[in-house]
Amino acid sequence: MANIRPFSKDRFAKVSREILDKNYRTKLGLHAQKLLYGLASCLDESENMFPEWDIHIEGLFKYMNIQGTNKRYEIVRDTILEIAQNPLQYRVNEKKWGGWSWLSMWKFDAENSSYVTIKMGNDVKPYLLGLKEYCRLEARYYIKLSSNYSMWLYPLLRNVANKREAFMELTLKEIRELTYNEKTNAYSPEKNRNANAALLNWVIGIEKKRGAKYYSPVETVTKDGEIKQTGAIAEINEKTDLYVECDVLKTGRQMSHVRFNVQFKTDTFQGKRKAIKKAYRTDYKKDGSRQLVIEEIKNGIDKDRISISMQTVEEMAAAQGKRVGDLLREMGYRRDGERAFKT
Image (cartoon, rainbow, N blue to C red; front, top):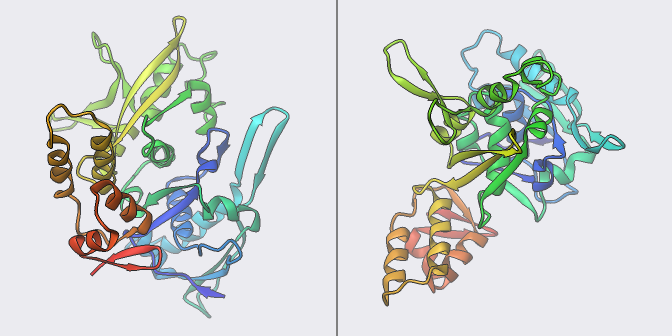
């Protein structure tokens, strides 16, 4: 057995980009999604290292933010059971589909131990280890989300955020299937004339105001008369490292697709890194203006991060025309294997 590393908001999960494809889905609620990513963040890089874990129950309470809840033991049990009972599924078409179980074993005995024992299923190794093609999900961002749909949507959007053309398109049919709403009457065009608008409003969190040309996050009026943005898109924009805008596309006269336009917030590490890359691709007219832009971006880099990958440091050094060691010293970091840590 192996004791799991303490959960931390500064850690991140590396999950395979493949399971963020529209053909894959898993029916997990808010707590279960967060715990699954928390477990993924504790995995060893080697595919052969897939231990049977002992996880301290108090660590789970803290990670799930349920320390003061009377039913915290029950919540942990039900959350683990939910992960176990809802496998990773894929469906290409009606004649090509399958699935894999997340867990192969789990148990807890408070009389003899303070640890929950969990063993992941062997067949999900490649999807949680990510290997070379992975999406990085930082706990500091997803742990703040409070709705199932925000937790479902954020990893999909984070998966495309690093692309030069950072957007994702999903059909309304795909959104219904991915969120297990294909049989929900309120979102079925055959049973509700306002089904598409309801799907956009309650699942995605966008609406089109009367007279407006574009869709924007849903707004509600508080008891104090304040107008506040609510829903999945508003929560992702408020609490994570992403800023998202949505376009609703039509096929003929009918709404058919949602295009999610994604960007990192400018005050995040990834946002500044992407801005530097964009600056080097831009053809500035005045000599030296590119370097001024890059220096301005670089000076705002968040120096309080716990760790960053050496691949990121190498890319930044190349973009700035510096040696890796010099850049690490400037930022106050030291190299330790494949990551650099704050000194």
